Structures are given as C-alpha cells and as structure tokens.
Picture 1 (cartoon, rainbow, N blue to C red):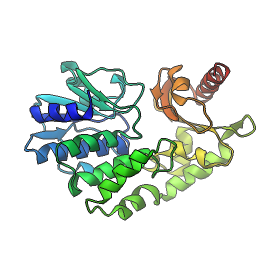
Picture 2: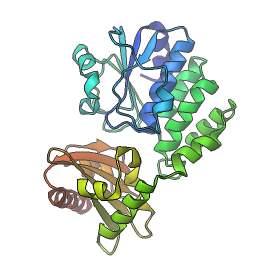
Picture 3: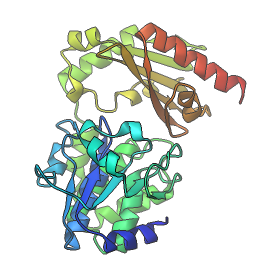
Length: 316
C-alpha cells in the first residue's frame, strides 16, 4: 500500500504494538518512537514491544513508550524490518498471531505481513514514517526528534550514497518544527567512547586488504572486544568505519558472536551490489549496505564473503 493508504489504515485501527528489529539501529528505533507518539497524538493506544536490546544511545527515545507487562494488542505493526528472522525474541508471540502491517524500505522485504507499505527508493524507513505522520497531521517537535534520528543515522548524517534530495527535504521539514539538531548530531556522529577508539585502532592494525586496497575486511573477534574493553554500546555503526579509508570500495566487518557464528556487514561505494553478495549467504539489505549471519569461525566467514563478492563481480 502507499503511505496515504497506510495512514488511512492506521487511522482505522487501535491498540497498537510496534515491533523493531534485532540489534536495533537509529532507523528502527526512531521509526517506532515517532509512530508510537504520532498514534498517541491521534488518541490511539500505542506501545513499542519491550526487549528491543537497544544501546544507551537510543534508550532516551523509548522512554514512556514500551508496552507494560500483560499488554494485549489488537494491531501489530513492524517498522524497518525486511525478514521474519530479524524480529526480537520478545516479539515472537506476536509473530505467531501475525503481523498486520509492515512499513519498510528494504528491497529484500519478504512480505511476511498481512499488509505492507514498502518504498525501496527511500534512504531510510524514517522517510516513509514522516510521509505517513504528515498525512495524519502528526509531524511536530515530539515526533520530529526520533524521525530526525532515524533519517540521519541511516544516511550517515547525510553522507552515504543512499541520501537523496527527498532525504534532505524531510530533514529540513523536521528541523522546521523547531528541533535543535546540534545535540542530536553531536550525540550520534561526533562522540566516541575511549573503548570505541581502541576498537578502531585494533581494526586498522589487523584488517585485511585485497585487490590493491579496494576491498577491506575487518575481523572483529570477541578477544579484540575484550582487549579494547568494548561492549555492544561502543559498536554503533562500526560497519561504516572501513569505508573512510581512501581507495576502499567494498568494506566488510565480521563480528564474532557467541556460539560459533559471525555477523557480517558489507558496505560498497564502487558499484558492487551488497544485497546480491549477502543474499548468497542468506542475508539481504540495500545495494550499498547489506548484511548476513553465517556459522563458522572468523576465517571461514571471511573466505565465504570473499567468495560471494567474487561471484557477484564475475556475473556483473
């Protein structure tokens, strides 16, 4: 459905539970918070599913919005989620009853919901939520703060290749509500913990470069995290770090997980389709940013992703 149809659909329902994805980023958290506040502005009963697993960077945007214990929704909406496997553990009961509406911008959307509002041409899901809330008359300073976080974080503060003229127009409209974006930009783009700096130092020391530096791979082991004194709180958007190196067109960050698996994040700027690469390993995402999870060691994951990259390059 279109954003206009989605707005009418949302106006016609009530008792909402809004779901975010695993290892939530600014886009899914910002979308959930803005939509929840917008629905409440219409007099609706709306909550966000607890147990999102958000880092401290995003906790403030969820304050007062999480569903209380025992809350029974009538309508379940997911935001910024392309696949069933990305739902949080606490969201599983709602998966069993079915998702009523999915709002998303990923071209790898699996269409798991009864209704889907998808625009794969938008840089952030926050842009779609903005359009919906504008249609509902709910774009105000209260909803603009999380929406700005959603749009700005998914575009790397408007530096990534997914940024469009529409992205800037949405950001300008949000700023026009009176939001002071300076503290938001400082919080999300110009502040790093000491542990995060140590992670970046160790990544530079231990990264692997291929094809004359066009491909950079950073294995991030659990032991590296321990050495840096880092936790998940320090790792927000670490996948974008390697892309800052001159000459790098494809960067891969491989995070070792507990239990013998690895989470891979692929970022591209030279024409390689990251979604096609990650799809070979069961993942998905966008043309310039995608991810997947594979079983095995860091070395096995690195071999697998390099093979996938070469397969896509050879069939381009």
